Image (cartoon, rainbow, N blue to C red; front, side):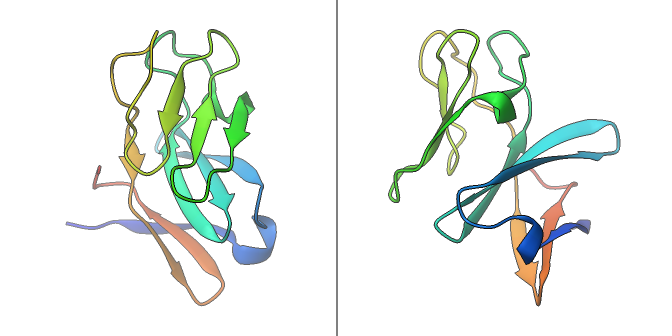
Length: 109
């Protein structure tokens, strides 16, 4: 069952920006890369550091976030990690309804 919740409006998250929201005690990093919205759990699977504070690699085909603690990167589309992280980051479905950016907090990709 889906549970889409509005977490921001489009003007609050312009291209190249990120925000962190809290939903049911889970921190979720939300990124706008070239108009595409991605949502991942804001916790590095290597050491639990906040991913939203890392370096956003805005590759149109394969955007990534680099953890600023140890350099692990995570693909925003798939959650796939690079060393030293070996466990993918949790991702959440995203949709835009009108001006509202919504994430499904019940479904994980």
